[in-house]
Image 1 (tube, rainbow over the protein chains, first blue to last red):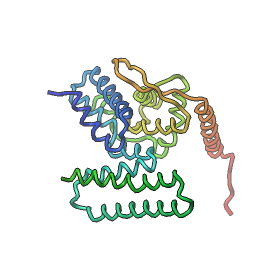
Image 2 (image 1 turned 135 degrees about the vertical axis):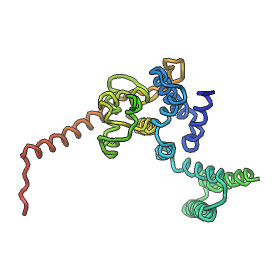
Image 3 (image 1 turned 90 degrees about the horizontal axis):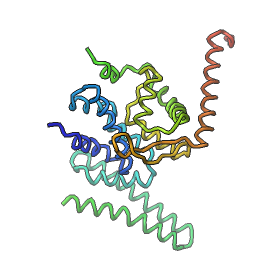
Image 4 (image 1 turned 60 degrees about the horizontal axis):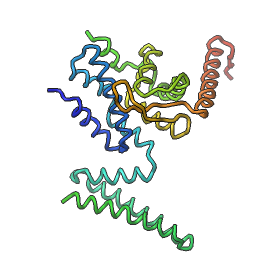
Length: 147
Length: 127
């Protein structure tokens, strides 16, 4: 039996990997439902209408890539780290860990420059804390998720 | 035989991808200059005015709308759609109207240039 709500939810879950704002997801879901309703009103059977509405939405990877362009550097980094944490570690794990090592090294260098170029003011110290603590927190989440 | 609605989904772009991408902003801004609208309706309107030749992957419209909003050309607000569903609407801002005018001028210039070349008004001698 075709269940529109669960089909829509399954589709949005794929988009939610890069488009993490609830409002953006709600907007896409409204579009999908509108397309489905129109096709159904034209007499198309529910499953076929949904399949066509999904096809018209376009490739999920491409939609995700477009949303990705709109995100700030920090949220992209956050998203990459989270998705890295979600992925199974087989296959390209070596390459992934190398990339992550580069990201961490860059962050630490950036923090060092920040601290050496000026007196350690309150804001610089807070910046350093963010740069070091946030990635560490993300890694700890990933390690916790692995168990 | 394909039904009319199925035939629309066949990928046979009459306009190239680059052309479609470049024309997205002026088309969206122009549609919104006639009144507030939402994604699904914008897509339908573009389909209508292009006689189905301009096919966007529906999902790709939204990141474009969000970029236009980020640039301050349009603004969004939430309302309620026909079925009582939450719906995000878009409205043209003053800066968007100015941008639309500027884009229209650019497209007209290009069009005029092509027409001059077409009618032989701009020959360039080799050598």
